[in-house]
Length: 345
Ligand SMILES: Cc1cc2nc3c(=O)[nH]c(=O)nc-3n(C[C@H](O)[C@H](O)[C@H](O)COP(=O)(O)OP(=O)(O)OC[C@H]3O[C@@H](n4cnc5c(N)ncnc54)[C@H](O)[C@@H]3O)c2cc1C
Image (cartoon, rainbow, N blue to C red; front, side, top):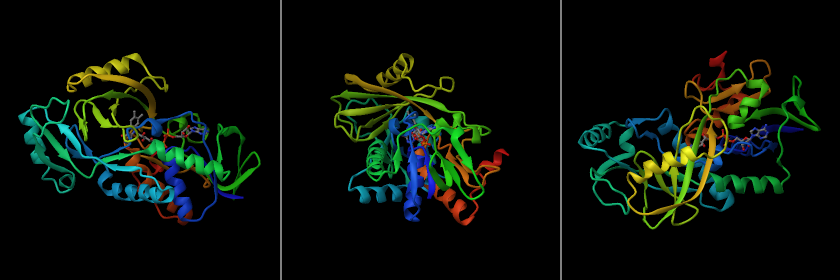
């Protein structure tokens, strides 16, 4: 008998596996690659909302723990996943310069928001300078998931198949799926949760995001945020991530011409050097009506749980929420009410 079945190997599922490993639980993981939010994400960690210069909910508090977990994975796999890279927020005028200066006095924001700089950045047009953010960067989550999947596969802990919800049997002390038995099951399917009959009452909305990968001669060592992000591809020198779009209607993972055009129009407003698009990808962010994670036990079955709703900041949100879920499931330590699915009845 396993301790856990985990359905979904995105950043949420991975974060739970970290808890299970720390607590010597044995588990089996299902993943069908139907969702790819984590794999195509920019992987950026940044606790500041760059539109309004306000702190993102819980992000400052949870970032340290997230980075600790990614560091642990670095040690386990002898790989570098975390890349600290400053964010240069392109300022649009004097009013934004003043807003930046005022916001950077906030005790939380001052940890990240530093001075305004007029230092030129190759290939970027920024007459009003940049507000500089430090302590930010990129986690190479796609590489991390590849490494984790390879390791799990080798240890016969990964089943690369669709989890068929109809075959799950729930008993008071365990769950059974085909010939597998486990004390508990946790669903971490990202937007795939929409197909899950056990949690269909949860208001997961889903927001499609598309990104481009470009090649350019511009040498941009920072993440630059204008009306879109341009960020160095940490896996391939000379390539840059451009993203992302937000679409609340289309729920497919199919890249669209409209999104590509939208991103390119925005990019051309501030990138002054030529570029070539080498890749375009799309995924669905698991966003929630109240913009908080969806974590907790099924209202009837205490051994069936969910870890979802990481929204636009999965890198920061997933490790801390996975920890809360594990402590709740094993030690009955209450979770923060804001993330507990009990809020939806
Ligand atoms: C374009 C884009 C850019 C983004 N940029 C950032 C960023 O810079 N920083 C950041 O922190 N976040 C970013 N995000 C958000 C982030 O990607 C998400 O918050 C996070 O990846 C969600 O992780 P997850 O594990 O919940 O879901 P997913 O990554 O979608 O993983 C769910 C997994 O479950 C599997 N699955 C689903 N159903 C089943 C089933 N029935 N059987 C078996 N397996 C199943 C799926 O195949 C998938 O592998 C971005 C998202 C997008 C789309």
